[in-house]
Length: 265
Image 1 (cartoon, rainbow, N blue to C red):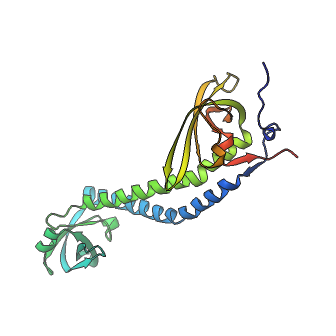
Image 2: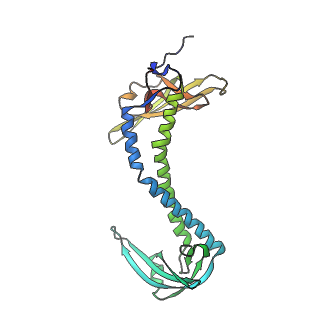
Image 3: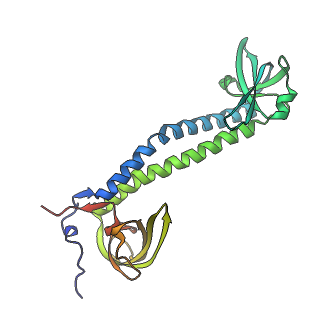
């Protein structure tokens, strides 16, 4: 049986010298720049959401009732002509007066009056933010769930972009540096078009013989790319795959990887 012929730069002692492909480098640095604002925003919102949840649990389980009153109510309009209704209130704990505000709906806003006495449930360790105003119809859980939902959405986006711009490239570089080459077969090719950019999505298979690292088997991987690098990749094409001997399921299609091995010196 003949020995498979791979790209010559892969035939060198490990670890290989690796460089980022030019077309990949421009895109990844653009994604990283776009990701930077998400990191502090996502981290801040996640912190706020966790704090609100902890404080709400404190109020629910160990809160005490104190006297308070409505000191001001006001409306604000957004650019989309939506109206936000807000009521400010004060309450006293250990002879110290604290002030907070709460967002209300139109019915709740109409029902409260400035100077109206209310009962405020306060969690003592977090008395400045751990409180629930006793306003008819007001549900603190809706406020907490709203902040949590926004935090989850932004946090999910933050982790997705961090994975795409840092974790995934690191894994790709690691495979090009340490991966074992093997021949794979393209099993499926389809494409999607977005704003005149055609992206090819490729599924390939490769068979790993059992050895001291794993039991072997037939594994599949996926790759996507656009431009000339995908031509001519068709169903049945034989391609070079780099896989991790310790984890054979982890692989990449070398031709479409964002990194390349440098020729040995």
